[in-house]
Image (tube, rainbow, N blue to C red; front, side, top):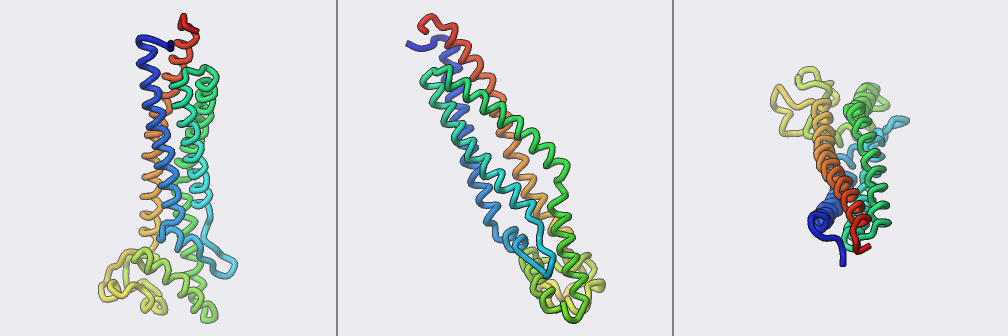
Length: 233
């Protein structure tokens, strides 16, 4: 025999939340792999120009997310098995893992909020470096090759949206469909939009996971106490 009454209900609720947690780990792992291999970000972040190269901060964050997703899948499985088996040892281990994961998520959330504009600013700075160095005749061909990747990937051109302000040597390398109008999207705004959209997606996923983790910590401790106080143990 196992736990009875309300504790038994909590047991199955914990199993359900752990299954959702395991699925969330699968989703985070899948989204992280998608972000890592997304054509827009990957084509921009592998660029190099002389001694300048695109920042790798975004990829470091993605690798962390991949690790988090894998750990969440393991912890979710541990919680499901511990709940079904009514094992105090497994539930205690599960609770400790949750506390560590929750603390890491809060720390990562604070760091991400403080540096949320850091990635886009670094990529913009890289674009500006290539743009400015492209003014030199001997650097023009290699600069054009890098800038064209930005323009074709993000459908943008130049540092601002005013066509007349775009350097004459760069005009012919702007997207063809925008070359006949006066105002076009500038690459600064498009870069910011690209990374902000991805950070927003990650933020939503992190918030959902944090709520699930709070419920799991509560249920795991209640179930652990119920097992300890159960007369059948």
